[in-house]
Amino acid sequence: MTNPVPNSSILRINAYKQGKSNIDGIKNPIKLSSNESSHGACEEALSAFRETSFSLNRYPDGNQTSLREAIAQTFNLNESKIMCGNGSEELIQLVVRAYVSVGDEALLSENGFIMSNIHCLAQGAELVIAPEKNFKVDVDALLARVTDKTKFCTIANPNNPTGTYISDEEIRRLHAGLPKDCIFLIDNAYSEYVDKEDFSDGVDLVEEFDNVVMTRTFSKIYGLSALRIGWMYSSQEIHDLIQRIRTPFNANSPAMAAATAAVKQTGYVNDIKQHNIKSLQYITDKLQQLGIEVVPSVANFYLLNFKGVEGKMASEAGAFLQSKGIIPRPAGNNDDFLRITVGFESENQAVVDALTEYMNQ
Image (cartoon, rainbow, N blue to C red; front, side):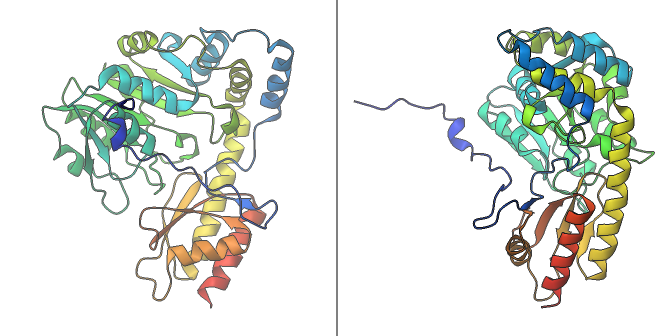
């Protein structure tokens, strides 16, 4: 008797590993490994979430009406081109399922959301990875790898785990160099944190072209990670095609209720953004004084580069932080890079104090 034969494309995939959540022997560690919001959800979102407890026996609104309306009003978008899902990750998967086939080439940057790679591999695509330059997406490197088989291209902007971004001009240059039949997906999970004049979330590009998709999430600045809710904006043609394979209730009622309330609280979001900017500057100044390179970040996390720091390694620094009850996340080469989420002032200070002690050993 033979065993079931799996899809050969799945066998190429290494399972995703999430950020560590606990430390043996330490209660209530400072978790800075998953880029979650230390501020949590706004009170309006919490109240809306609690209200849904009285109707948990009912299916959610499969049309996602209230949330799509709220997103459209907040960002001045066309409601009919908005789709919500079980995190932006699900929506990325749906786009890949709809447009990527066996033998196609998926063009990706060296860094980014690893689930995009996984979804493309699952479809039988060949991954074409472009190296980055100075910790940033290198548009020239991506364009040099475009072929007539390139059917999907995605970048995270801001990028992960570097926290860097590329300008609207560079985004447009990349798009212009892609084949017309190639889907260009911009993962904007951290865009709400950015305060740069030359940054664009890609909405204008979606409005101008039929092959662009922009995804956003409520998991980061809105503090709704546990509820798994995100959204995408695309051409009507892409939206309607994805609608054919979207499950009817892919976004649950508590998540949509909380997100509908949260997206309207622009003042709350801006307060968190400003706190993040100040915190990043403080952390960067302190750690660079210790001789650690902090890659300039516009997101809610920062990448530490220990390469070239004599006698010190990221893996050792990470272990030392954990001994102090702080959970960072290894990134790239474990001996060179460490990614840490921006937390509350006390959490950020704990990181600075611990790394000061480590560097002075």
